[in-house]
Amino acid sequence: MKLLIALLFPVILSCSSIAEDKRPDEFPVVSYNNLEVSNFNLKISAAMNNGEKWVYHPLLVIQEYRKIADAGFISILLSNDRVENPLNSTITVVEEGYPDDSVRGQWLQFHLGRENSESAWKIKEIRQANLCGRMNSPKEFSKELCP
Image (cartoon, rainbow, N blue to C red; front, top):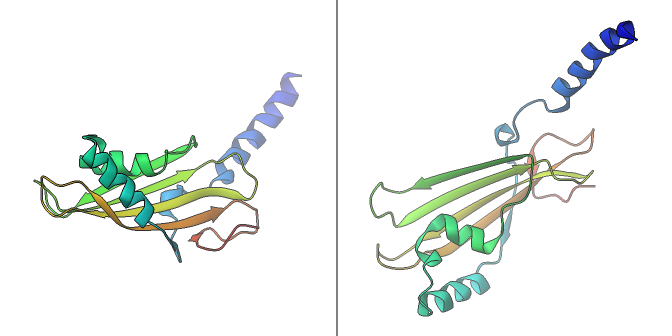
């Protein structure tokens, strides 16, 4: 039994190390879809009129738009146009490890803006791409649907 475990242990370790060839946030984004934002911006305006505070923080705005998935890997990168009182913000969310055979993960990039430091954030653009999980799928994010 000890011999069987000693023989199988290196095989198990090597399988897990080749299952993911690199982090999903390192895969290229070759194409993406633009998602519709006007209805959500109406929701932001209504929330601002109701005194809701989430409309003043870009991370809370994107979380209100779409809850972050329960995935094995989540990367969130926030980039502002300036340090104090930014007027434009880009948030990139990479999720990987979906419990789905065909879709391995998703890349979302939110472009937000506001008129001044006192106003609510609005979504200018949302880009979305998928990372397919099948063995022969290309290792890139694409707007193409996964087989």
